[in-house]
Image (cartoon, rainbow, N blue to C red):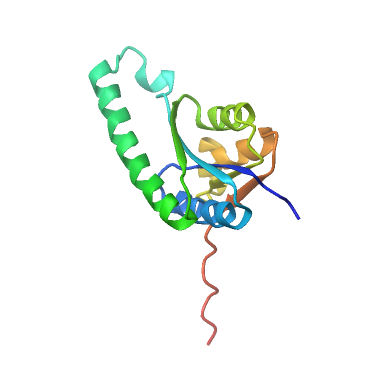
Length: 153
């Protein structure tokens, strides 16, 4: 059985990342591990902003709001894990930044949620969790709610 001492939990404030937080806090408590929540402020694609400049005040306001959300999630994680939890707000490509942060921080495990996109939506948007799984130096736990079984009459 693994003996995880340092866990990185990537959150994007979605329902699937709430499940990731639940899994990560349970593991941190069980293994007496250090837990860090990380959120990545994604830069807008160049094609979407070509010719447009994002006002620095708007970017700063977004960072402040995300830091507030991350603080709320951190408080919940500390309550669930029954230990102090660290947090980091990063900027850039989410998958690349999560992989870099986990490697540089020498984490034993990355926990991330997935929205379970399929088909064309998955092809066009990709999956941050999938990219992290392929590129991470350590194990990655992907948390996803499974739909309830269909009613059988």
